[in-house]
Length: 168
Image 1 (cartoon, rainbow, N blue to C red):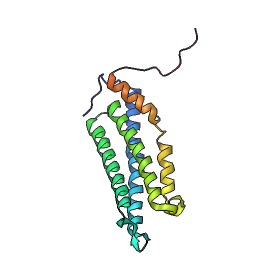
Image 2 (cartoon, rainbow, N blue to C red):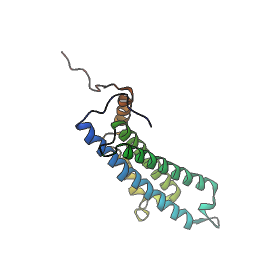
Image 3 (cartoon, helix red, strand yellow):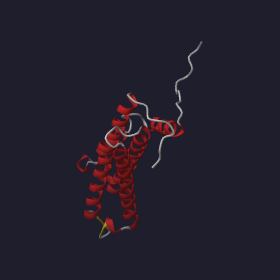
Image 4 (cartoon, rainbow, N blue to C red):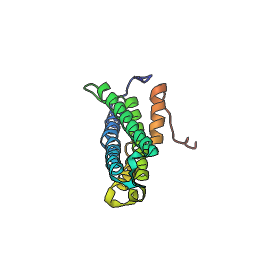
């Protein structure tokens, strides 16, 4: 397990850690799981050239990528939550889980649209909504770029002031 180089600060970072882990769990993981489930059902039913599209190797590879990414994010979320014990997750673990889960949700929902073809843009199949949700929710609790700054800050044990210096 990756550990921060400095002790967790209390207060605001604890609340943000809980929010970030909740965002990763409830949104990133749920969006990706919904995208994967809908895609698995679609490729098992949809036929092209007289065969189910699930029989094509590139489709199988894309689905395998989706499953691997979802499972990897689940493990990061679980590690952050279990590392918290009875308290809040560490800011480092929460930021890693949030950043990874949100990026995963965006890429998995994008693959879902691709594997649905033209139906991927149809409201009937719901993957277009999941893709919008993945992008929108990646902003909540701090953008992915801010999470990267947070991860570096926690890992190095340094605080970074991202604001421009004020004129004297």
